[in-house]
Image (cartoon, rainbow, N blue to C red; front, side):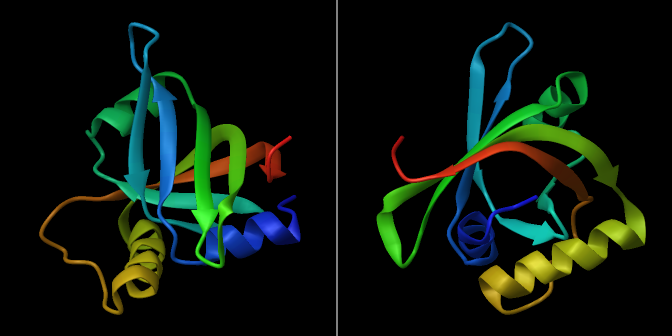
Length: 127
């Protein structure tokens, strides 16, 4: 279950940094748009992107961000990608994220999927 402080940060327009594990065990981190669906965290990506390939092989993920109203208070979430949405279900989420960040639906010029993260640990602030 997402805590209210974590949910508030995730529902804002701050970019998150998603860390996954490369095949050789090295970390891979990328900035991305994020949102919430119930008690899960969602993000979009290309189906063959490096992060998608990493997370299909090893679903462990770490997210970090700071909320716009307090950029000195980090929000950190660790969890697992538990589902991949494709097709119409994915585009519904993708458009919600695009409208949140840009004010308009996402272009259909590229194939996209949505990763669904189940949070296992979450923290706001240093600790």
